Image (cartoon, rainbow, N blue to C red):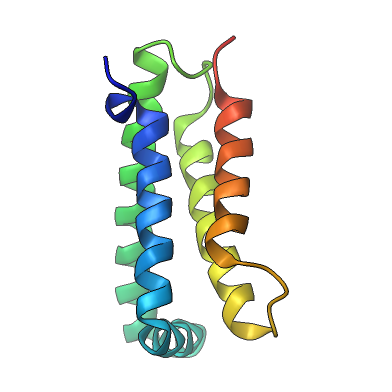
Length: 123
């Protein structure tokens, strides 16, 4: 099995590619952040964002479950682990766009994901 075929590597690839897209399209991501914040007040936007959230969690959950099934990850609650990955993913971007960042967003997010995956790894 090549490294790219592991659930860990596919999660890392998702994170890395999202970081590249963010850097090329910062204006669009700023708009998305403003759109997301309106979900707190607008039921229609909340419905759209809930669909996005659920799709992301399902993607991460499926990768976590695959990792458990293949013996790459510990026996953990795949739904909670998927939400944790999503929260890390979204939190770093929200912070990046809502403060004057003192960090590289891709490096910081890779650090989060690497540590999370290391803690999930079956020893």
